[in-house]
Amino acid sequence: MLLQTTPLAAQGFAGLGADADGFAIPHPGAVLEFPADHGAHPDYRIEWWYLTATLKGDDGDPYGVQWTLFRSALRPDDGTGWQTPQLWMGHAAVTTRDQHHVAERLARGGIGQAGVTASPFAAWIDDWEMKAHPDTGISELTLSARGETFRYELALSAKGPLVLHGDQGYSVKSADGQASYYYSQPAYDVSGTLFLPDGPVEVTGQGWLDREWSTQPLSPDQTGWDWFSLSFDSGARMMGFQLRDSGAGYTSATWIGPDGQSQSFSDGALDVRPLKTERVSGRDIPMRWRVSLPDQGLDVEVAALNLNSWMDTSFPYWEGPVTISGSHSGQGYLEMTGYD
Image (cartoon, rainbow, N blue to C red; front, side, top):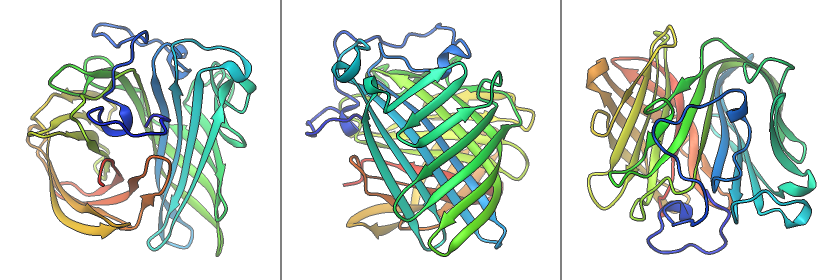
């Protein structure tokens, strides 16, 4: 989700398949280090801190929350003041059964308007903030954001270990070998308050934080992705994605047991197939999916809570909470990009 102003042909969704000379490239065998890797990596071109939460209100209704901070670099150095090449974009959303509230912020990092510190951890853009309690890494967080029609204030407490995707955090994205560094904290307990047009709602639920950075994570012919974070009533979880191209596409998955132990699955192990498409914001978008991971006995149907969870932002995409039924039950989040 680069902050480019003009889409370019054959460069993947949002330019993520474009060459970027001079930037660092992920390599297998690198060892992720914490808390340092909770912070920014300005020698890589793109990066994000991405939190989703599936919640239940004291009114009995389901809710979804998103908070995302993106960093995009114009050149591979940090710079100072207005001369910094680091650009920042924030997305926040609250989803209900019949409403989807969205806000976006844009910033330059060198003037303090947006940024990330690793220890103590804090990520912010304007008055939106994801912040850790002192000496807790990212295991204890507070989260806040606001838009014209909503605001939220949440507290998050991790109940499991960090999960490294792919090969110890080296996550391959294509048959050509494009890759990113990618880890998650998928097991937050969440509580707090949503402030909506009809009034405040106290909520509790589960949160999932994704961290990813790279320079060219897509091949030029990859036009978008379908990404699933699924939390099952059994206590297990799964992250899976399909990157779409002119052929069969590319898939990857991570299965996380109730004890937090994880197993990665490479291309072809995960199968995702659209079952029902709806017209959303002038686009035909799959709203019901069959997701299967035979090695774990998973065969489920994933359905959107609110069909109209369209993120009408600088790079528009669909993002919202989902329900899970079939061999496993539960709830999760789905992100779909590149649907024109």
